[in-house]
Structures are given as structure tokens and as C-alpha cells.
Image (cartoon, rainbow, N blue to C red; front, side, top):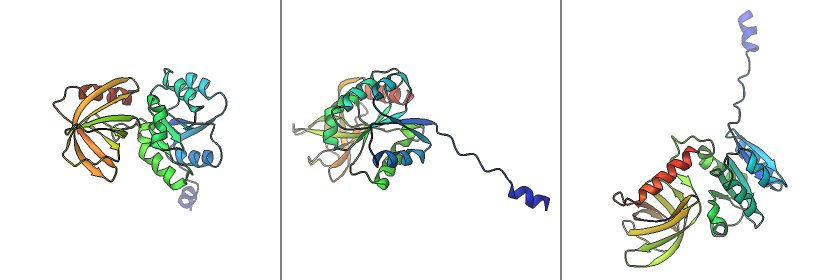
Length: 235
């Protein structure tokens, strides 16, 4: 009897506390509610910022922020990237395409929520990037970042692509250009605190307009990329 009574009144396990904060900057409904729910599922606390977002990002620590890709977003990104505490925060864009994000490429947008926003696709993106927000780097060695990349093929063709993820050993990109697996390539790009760099590589996989490049191990210039990735993950 006593044992049964004690079991019935067993304490409820405490809810896991949020370990990171994401700033939702001037977002309208229903996007604000959908994203709040998605981040909460991964113990990331959504904080709604309106009006003084730039000032708060200069003073307060956030692990990530979400803002609509429009001209007004530039001042907020600039405030974040130039603050001591949020210089390497994860920046999510809302709306637009990867090409639209090129207007803000110097701020290193990490990922984009497409509009109209759907809960299932939003949750999928948060799940894919939440380890970076939560600083769980042992399981996450690739940095999602959207920036313009210049490429030169062995046949001297020059074209542009958009980066998706980068690691110390390679990167994934999007481009309409045809490249065969095994093709030699040279890429050039700049990332936040990393000045423009050239590095040789080989196309390691391809799927429709997406492809991956493995950096040439003997190209010493890739060491700069490795150092940038390690510094990004340590902040």
C-alpha cells in the first residue's frame, strides 16, 4: 500500500532547461509562433526582439537570430557581427532565396527559412542546424554558410556557385554548371574574418544542382580554412 502510494506520487522529472537563445527579430505571425515552437523543441529559448534589435544584439549574448531578408536587416546583421559577444552567432534568414542572400553575403548568413513558412520544413532546418546553435561540435563539424564562390575548372571555365556548408576538408555548393565527379577545380571565397582565399579541390559528389568539393590535401592554403572553421566553432 505504502509502496503503491509512494509510486503514485513520484516526482515528475524536471523539464530540460534551455541552453541557448535565439533572437526572433521583428517577425510577424504566424512565422514567429512556428519558429518559436520549433526552437523550443531543441531547448533553444526564442526571444522576440522588436524595434531595438540592433542595440540588444550589441549588448546581450544570443547564440542565433532569425530575421527577414530585407534592406532593414542589414543594420541588425552589422550590429551582430561587430559585437564582441555575437560576432559568430548563427544567422537565419527568413524568405527569399539563396541568391537573395547574396546581397548580405558579407555577414555570413548560415541558413534560410523559405516562405511561406511550413512547420515541417522549418523544424527540419532547425534540427539540421541546432547542434551548431547549441555548441555541440563533437557531432557537428560542418558550418552552414551562404556566400558567393568563384570557381575555375581545369578547362578554364569560370563560373559562380553558392556555398551551403564548409568544413576544414571541403565544402558543398549549388550551381547550374555541369561538373563531373573527379573533376579538378579551384575555388575562391571570403568568409567573415577570413579574407578571400583560393584553394584547389576535386568534385567528390554531385546531385542535380548540388555538388561537393574535397580540398586538395597538399594545398597549404586550406590550412587557413581549417583555422577559420576551428575558430568559428570555438566562439
